Image 1 (spheres, rainbow, N blue to C red):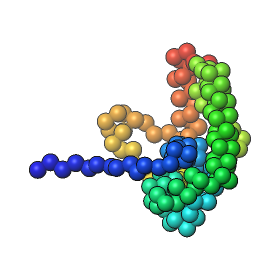
Image 2 (cartoon, helix red, strand yellow; image 1 turned 180 degrees about the vertical axis):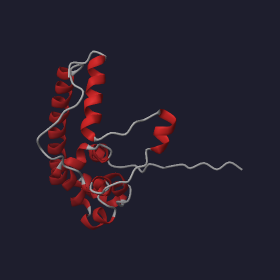
Image 3 (tube, helix red, strand yellow; image 1 turned 90 degrees about the vertical axis):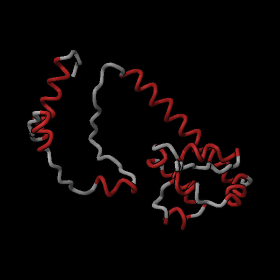
Image 4 (tube, rainbow, N blue to C red; image 1 turned 90 degrees about the horizontal axis):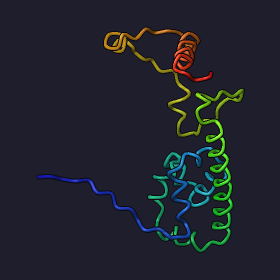
Length: 162
């Protein structure tokens, strides 16, 4: 007997289409106003689901989504956040095009901002065993500075200007 998993996507109001787009976009996790849109729908449920926009939207009752689609204030705020997102996307594309073939990595003096749902992965020390890579790939472990230097040397050797 063959069993298949089928995921059924609920129908949602057309006016909230952008909200579903935001749910699947990482930009949302870094933008306070975008996250606030989800929080306004049902703050308790949003927190219970670990501030996961995708899981959250598929858990919100359809009646609540219909209600929001008629809320002029919510739609106005959603449109305003969408406009800011489009400006961000345009500037990101321009920067990417400008630096194409010239940049390998971007370093900043600012400490990175990590969304709360990535906290378990970012703020803990991880013990990693590289013995398999040493044995099968002839990997030689090194400290960060040596590894970064060797990586940059390799990029220079294949023609990148770093």
